[in-house]
Amino acid sequence: MASESKGAAMTNTLTIPDQMPDRTPNQVMRALRGDRSAGEFATAVRRAGREIGEHVSCDARYVGRIESGAIRCPNYAYERVFQHMFPGSSLEDLGFAPRVGGRRAVDRWETADRNHEESDDVHRRTFLSGAPATMAAVLGLDHPLPAGAATPGPACVAPGGKVGAADARSVEDAVREIRLLDDVQGGDALFDRAGRVLRTAYQLLNCGSYGRGVEQRLQSAAGELAISVGWLAHDSGRLADARSFYAEALATARMADDPALEAHAFCNSAFLARDAGRPREAVRAAQAAHQVALGLGSQRLRSLLAMREAGAWAQLQDRGACRRSLLLAHQLYAAGPAEADPEWMSFYGDAELAGLEAQCWSALGEWERAEGCARSAIELQQPHFVRNRALYTAELAHDQLGRGELAAAADSGCQVVSLLGEVRSTRIRSMIADTAVRLRPHQAVPEVSDFVNRYDIALAS
Image 1 (cartoon, rainbow, N blue to C red):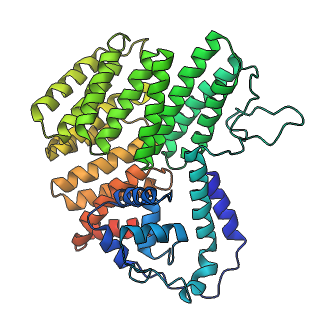
Image 2 (cartoon, rainbow, N blue to C red):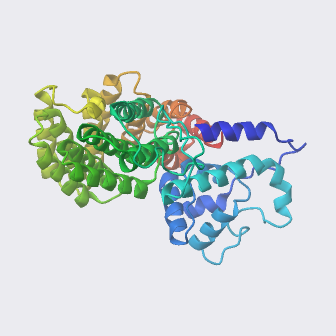
Image 3 (spheres, rainbow, N blue to C red):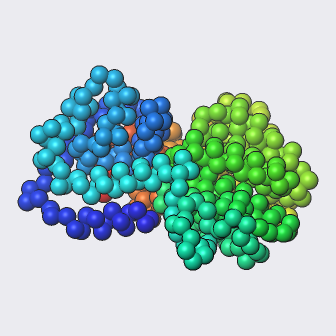
């Protein structure tokens, strides 16, 4: 969010050219994306960047801006990545304006966007590599250094400095606040902010001096925070990063001998593995989580884990195993809430149960059942879960399209587009981008034409 405000402020200081360059859609890059969603292509771009040591922060929105012609010439980091992906291609071959000559024609127009992209990439490189960075006051976790101390690096507390219960409580409160914000906004706008909080928490844990009780609270809170940041990475399309954060949380859980944290880390790892196309890993992670959860006394947690396993079996096209897991999930859910239910499971209600089941039937190609469950999820969802409302509606559009209901899918797609201004989730944007790709050839249907127009406008804005 802060980076977007900074970008907006930068734009206001520019002198706008008398005549903007023509934003001609980049059909070459669109063709190179093929049948991949914008989110999937963005993942491929980031992967290619890592192969050559460039950590570009490409997401579905950036891909959309390239394809719409809003970005006429990428920065040097992206140029190197694209030429690594498509060897022997010049910028012009890829549909961009040439850097020499043609670059001057778009320079003033793109200065703000280019600076924003490059500062995003630098910030991301700094965060992911663990290089020193000033730790600002984030969500109340600021710790001023003693007078005369050097400019702070990652550490937020002097070595051996006292860390007390109030500090542990601040980390716990930060976890809650990030979860609440995610319910409304989605992961894209929160990832960097939450990452700074996570670094602060681990510096408290690694550099401070505290008693056993505070240590246990800090370990659990830092592990939960790592899971939250991992989820934000997952939701914003940074799947490899999410896997690293979940691994960090799992290591913290085992060092702290905290089975509740371990079950949570395995639960999210199962979800991530399924979305990353590793369903057998998802099954193993869900089963490992279930074993840990047996002694925790929460039937609702076990229900969610059975749902995670069901989703993986559905992706493997194992109908029998999927149905057994779904039945177990519903039986455990029917036991009702309990005092032992983890705080982080507040999202897991009737709507989420229906939404996860919809994903299972969708993966199995049982479109009528999937559509019925997706409708139930939308109807049951509490209003403040804006992100999930958008998610379930995007799922409904996908299922309606599976049934060949073009007009209905387009209407549901329009509802998702209307929420994109509030929800910053690459995962949801990728889902609706896929729907747009599949509907685009059918614009003779008025509802489809209306959806495609609205989607293109939203993507370019």
